[in-house]
Image 1 (tube, rainbow, N blue to C red):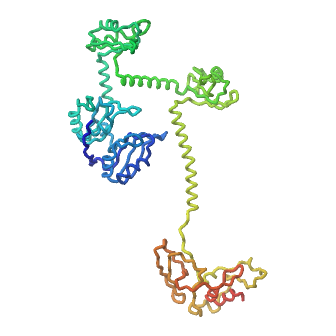
Image 2 (image 1 turned 90 degrees about the vertical axis):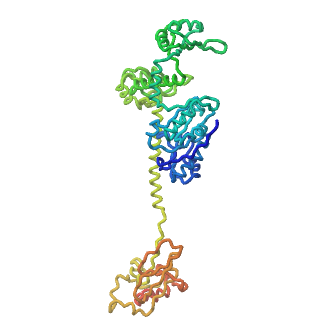
Image 3 (image 1 turned 90 degrees about the horizontal axis):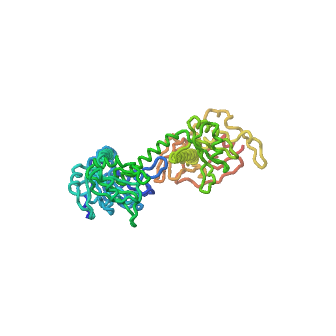
Length: 561
C-alpha cells in the first residue's frame, strides 16, 4: 500500500496543555519505560499509566504531559506507532472534552481492509487529507486485524474529502468502503429496521434425509426463491443446516412464521432470519447476560456458601444440618473428579430471612470435628474484587505505622544544624560555684582548699572594682578552650576599652553565620601557643593566663590560699 506523506501535526489553540494520549500499550509497560522513551523529545512534566482501581492492572493507555507544546508535537511526529514491548503504540493529542469524540464530526469508518494494513499504514494513507486526531484498526484478542477501522479527522471537510477520494478504491488489491461513522445506537436502530425486512432465511435441525430438492419444494410454496443451499462436509455428509434466499421480504417473513417449529423427522425445525456471525454472537451474548442477571437476582440473599466441611459430609448430611432454619431448595457439596469432597458447598433457602438466620446460627458451629464458615454466596468477580480491596486496605494500614515510625526516627536521628560554640571569660566562668557541698571533704593526696561557694561571698569592700583598675590586661585564652568553628574568623574585642560588637569575616566554607554571644572570644591567627596547665582532680585545668585574668580574691581561691 502506497504510504502518503503526512503533514506535521499542529497542536493549535485546542491543545495548550501539551498533553499526549498514548494507547495500545502492552500490559507490562510502566511509567518509567514511557519516561525513558518520551524524555528524548523534551522535558516531561508527568506520566500516568491508567490502571484498574481494584486490581491495579494497566488499562492499556497512558497520558504524557510535556512542558512545551513543541516537544509534544515532536514526540507525536517521531514516535507514533513505534514498537514498545512488542506492540506499536498509538499517540494522539489528549482530548479532555469528550464532546468532540462523541459528536462524530470528522469521524470516518473504513471496512473491507486487507489483513496486512495496520494503524501506521492507514494513518499514512489518510493523513494526506488533513490532520488526524485518532486512527485505529480494530483487532481481536490475538492482535490480528478485524478488517475495519476508524479515522477521526480534525475537521469535517477533511473527512468528506477522504470519503470522496478513497471510497471504492483498491487498497492492497481489496476494494474498501469508506463512509461516515454511525454511532452504535443508530446502527442498532437500523439493524432493527433491517430485521423486519429480510430475504435470506436460515434453516437448521433437520436430518440427513433432507436434500436441496426437498428444501426447495418446502420453501417454494411461500414465494419465488433466488437460491437455496444445504451446507455439507467434504465427504458430502450434510451438516444439518442450510439457507434459502427469497426475492422479496414478504415471502421470507411468511416462510419463517409458517415453518419455524414444525416437526420434521422427529425434530423441531428451526427457521429464522439469517444473521452474520458477529451479529449472532452479540445477540447470544446479550441473551446469556440477561439469563445470568435473572439467575443472580433470583438467588440474591438466599444462597449460602459453606466451607471447612469435613470429608465425611455429603449432600444429604449438609441439607439435614441446615434444614431446621427453613425450606432448602438445594444443597450441594462440591467434589473433585475422583468424588472426594473439596471441603466447601452451597445451601440455597427459599427466602432471605431463612438464609440470614442460618448464617447467624451455623457460622462457627462444629460439625463432626471442624467449625463451619457460613456466609452469603458471592459471584467470583465480586469476591475477587472484595478480597483485593481488603488486601489493599490492609497493606495501606501496615504502611502507615511504618511511615510514622520512619518519620519519628528521621526526626530523632536527623543531625541538627551545627551551632556556634560559646566561650566565656574567666570572670564569667566564676558566676556559678565551682564546687558543690559534697566536694568539701578532703581526699587523700589532694591539697586542702577553702571551698566556699562564690554565691555566699559578701560584697567587695568599697564596691565593685572598676574595669580600668585591673592591673593585668586580659590575654587570649589557651587553644584548648578556644574551639572556633572552621571557616569563621572573628576579631577579638578590646577588653580594657568600651565593649564593641564583634565583627566577623566569612570564608567560602562558612555555611551559617555564628550567633553573637556576649563575651565570645575566638582565636585569631596571632594567638600564642598553648600553655602548660596544672591538673587538680575535680577541677578545671589551671593555667597562668586564667590566673592572671582572675580578680585577686579569686586568684587566692584558685591557688588554694
